[in-house]
Length: 477
Image (cartoon, rainbow, N blue to C red):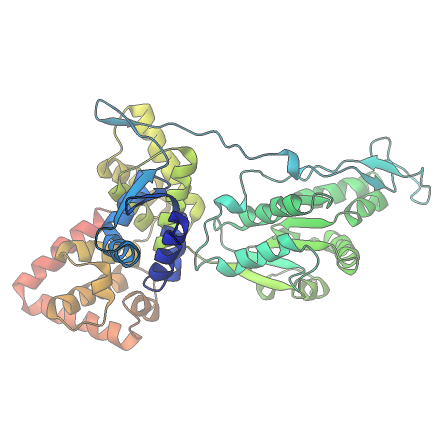
């Protein structure tokens, strides 16, 4: 039986999966589609020119081996790139794609309310004028879907839990699901993704996304208008309630009290609660203990700062969505330079494209460096361990994988020690963190490396030149 292009590529993926990291496989191979097989030539479709160049530079031998296993020595691989590129006077023009996300499916159906909220407020909460059908706006942001949420080691638990909740709201142990993490790491994006996916899978569910600030203002208005019961009834009929930034309930005793009762009602009736916060429940200050204990009923999942591969994947995804393409070295520079905040990373990309367009300049590494100086250094940016390692590897013409390996070759050991030395002096990272970034070394190894470098600086003139050159290159970043 003759194999199809899909079966050939599936077998290739099985081989590739065993030879790369999980993050590398998910980032660079899962998005690829096989589209045809003709005369032992397999054609695969990749999302962009950048994607193709990355594969050619980093995974060419692996791809060749996988094709050879399936198609023999005569087997070949061809690429089909999704986006076309246009050149005008050696400068690229950027074709921006308009998002085509359907908004209809996120609309809630009309539901019965025990109060007439569309007319004058009811002063007497015991008088119910009959059920009235109202439509609740979900308030979901359609740009924040699972489709454009890039998964990595930094967010895998939270994303997996969110996807489980989206498929079975109120029916998992993750109720409430509390997603916590620092600024710009994707809490709001993931919370909206869960709501959007629930509406896809369960159109009859009433979903509401609301910020803690808006919830508080609504409650204050209900107190002012003597319509607190209306406010409570409204929230008690929600099937999936998503509250963003619950840490802002801190110190607001009456708001916490009303949310406590709404929380209890929804939880007891099998409704799903999704909460976001900048801290885990144990670190939230100014919150009632009875409320904090309920936050711990389900799952608390954290979002961490993205690693290098995830940052590159985020930029790649953003460029693909917007129909743009940047030189590989520019993408790498952005990913190396902005390490802690996804929002800053995407903002830097947008700023770079805007500068290029407005000033009619081609996007180059030099332009990216100028932009990063203005965009990030004003906020006292700390040089990252990743970037230091890149500069050192480039200087000694070594691969990052080689430097992190267990080899004891003199030139590799020296490069590794120099990167540890600069990481200790130029970052606030702990010795354990530096060691973990350097191939799993312990803190004693890092201290030994720093002492060795200091001794060589004092005794070896040529080594001092190395250190001076590398320091200048790092500072130019």
